[in-house]
Image (cartoon, rainbow, N blue to C red; front, side):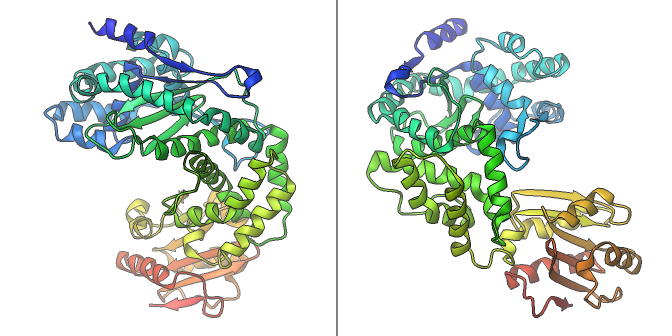
Amino acid sequence: MRKALFLLALLLTTFWGVAQSSSAIEATVEVNRTHCLVRFVESIAGDGDAATRKAFEQSAFNTPAVQQTLRRYNQLDKDVTYTRTGYPSERLGSLGNSWGLYLTASAEAESLADLQRRAVGILPNEVLEDLRQVQQQLDPAFEALLWQPYQAELQKVKTAYADFLRDKKLLQHFVRLRTFYGSVWPDELPYRIMLNPLPGQGRFFSTRATVANNTVLLSCYPASRDFVFASALMFHEMSHSLSVQQRLALQQNLDRWYANNKSPNRKYAYYLMEEGLATAAGEWIYKQQTGQTETDNWYNDDYINRYAKAMYPLVERYIDTGRAIDSLFAASAIATFDATFPTATIDYTNLFRRVLYWTDSDDPDLTLIPFRETFNSTLSMTAAPIMKGEAALKVAQTGSYTPVIIITNHHAETLAYLRQQLPALRPHRLRPEKSFVLSTIGLNGPLLLINAHSAEQVGTAAQHLSQQKRIDPKHPLWFF
């Protein structure tokens, strides 16, 4: 019976597409049981849909034996990242990963055994076999919690959503985003929009989407038909795939245009460019459906939300006139960032977005809890110890991450070493027996130094920085 359902799902896959001459990228809306099972295991193991994880945790399937299986799953070396030579390191196109390729393979698979065959070479056979065993063990939970309750409605919504995308001509609109991004994505290379059921009811069709290569992972409430918001979200994520496939020469030019700009905010504008553009692009798709952009927040990060809104008129003008991103666009985007965030170079919310935590603590993870609970970071690095930490020192000296240095031991020796290595510390009178926070700006950018004599003082320092909100150049030192 299950095999028959697989075949039926494949036969009923809804397809729409337009040939090259009609200027639309092809796409399919699909439901695949094997793919949904892979996503289910991913979610209940902690890296996916919270609603699915909650439903599992409240079910009779959540046993000690299954928890042990999930721990085994999380220990598998299944997400190997590789670097693409020649691509700017800050761009999405510079990296690839094995898990994305595995998810793409799962969209084609008719069974776990078929997935294992399709994924040969993506991961070691040992890892593939371990994955198959875990997924097979959790198949009954998936069948009872997601597949049986929702598969019939999934088939209905698959057709309804394909009809919606066709009627709204959203793939034809998406072609204009391809032009804007300057990307290589042939009309004949289809996106595969893979629906994955969420338990329960939701107002919106979807509030979560990601893209792996040409596979759109769209978690959805099958009973919902509120497609407008979900489509803006989906095309936001598909815009990231266009960014990945942006022509190499344009990616290199963008990197150079930002680096050579005279604005002190140029690197911060560059860091937010990816999400800012995708958010604006998603809103442009939203406007094609409703006639206007959303009136509330576009993104759940204040900086990205404000930047996307401020940049939207520029993005819309380029899309509507069929222009690709160029040097004038880059200069205008940086100027927009400058006007929107005049204190970005000293604003802790911005500075902690990319942070190097460098400490001599015996338990760095425990020591850093107050900072991680206080400040949100998109990218963070942790290094220990401080003395002889050559790799961390190199990062601190480049300014690519905001150095947050936390001394908890050997205060005199460590301070002497840091003063020798980091010229930004030398103008300040730093007494090792005192507890203090130093927030200063050197030649390579901001630097924060916390000299603490207890775990409680580390928490006090984090609270002080949160309340202070930004660096005060006139009062860089705070003793406590």
